[in-house]
Length: 277
Image (cartoon, rainbow, N blue to C red):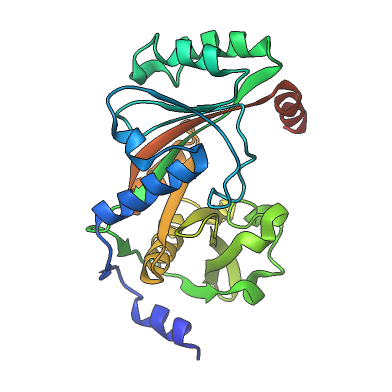
């Protein structure tokens, strides 16, 4: 029996973890990472006034980001930081300074930005909410099923449609860790962690339809989050605002909303994505 398997058998019940990282340290790491992504300073997200910067490539940015941005808006709740290029600067600057921060990421105001960006061959594409763990409340939640720690060699054959949220076939090299839930040897749920940047690993989760609403998603998610933190990394979780099931899972696992993000892409890119649906 492996060390990790023994560990999970010991933690078969709900148990609070001893995490050597404070919420303040977690937030500091996240702000720094957003600074790398957006080409700004970490403290820019804490200002009361909005900030506009030019986007550029950075080796420290999240690996899946396509930099430089045409336009990317991020808010930690205090203001909006806009990472733009010369072609979109005036449009974005006017927009973020025209409406209250609470409405910049929603309709009807969002239509104003999109209509002006259309003239530049651009459209609003991705909108998401990001969550960070509450270190004071993070627990390993039990689901009654066997949990197994999976390293890269253990999940290399799991790049299948049913596990496409937990593992990303297009970016296999980023997937570093996973936890599976098993019913009599059958994999029924999987939470995966991708090493998207140096200090932060993103969590994705899938559960087979017939096993949903049994607390399995929260079990594999919370156990993976605890494992990531024990390895000295910050887990983060992303969900679309309309994905209530995913948001509920994040909250149940002691994740809290940290920042919101809106990304602009070329119109052709957005149109092609819509064709795939």
